[in-house]
Amino acid sequence: MATKKVKAPNIDIGITDADRKIIVAGLSALLADSYTLYLMTHNFHWNVKGPQFNSLHQMFMDQYTEQWNALDEIAERIRALGYPAPGTYKEFVRLASIKEVEGVPSANEMILHLVEAQEATARTARALFPVIDKANDQPSADLLTRRLEVHEKTAWMLRSLLEE
Image (cartoon, rainbow, N blue to C red; front, side):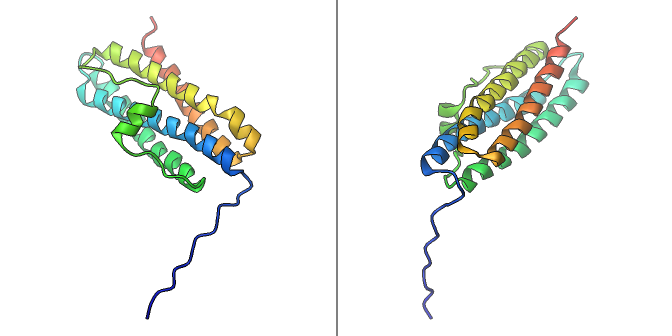
């Protein structure tokens, strides 16, 4: 018996196709920044050394674990809006505002790089609010608010490690 093909209905969630496309572009940039931040944090977790090793090794693990879980949430929001989520290194490099760190920096340089990357990710998230507000997209606004809280708090905590 042949299976009858059923076409999926068009998305009708109260957000225009044009607005969904713009929101997805911003969420894709956020996903790229978030993935780049995740990778940077995990790299630093593996390679940190010096007198702060134990505390930074654990802190970086906590941060990259939180970041890893956020990646899925961002990608799933993109999918819910009807678009494929970017998922290759090539796409992430093209979309991210964060640049990769070459070599193995000192522990304090790692912290500085992570502050900058956390703040860059927060800026990427914050830049989406005007579009999301205009489109009346509360789920994306909620996601961005939660991400901003994490990135701003993490940047503050990391910055505190560099203060005298």
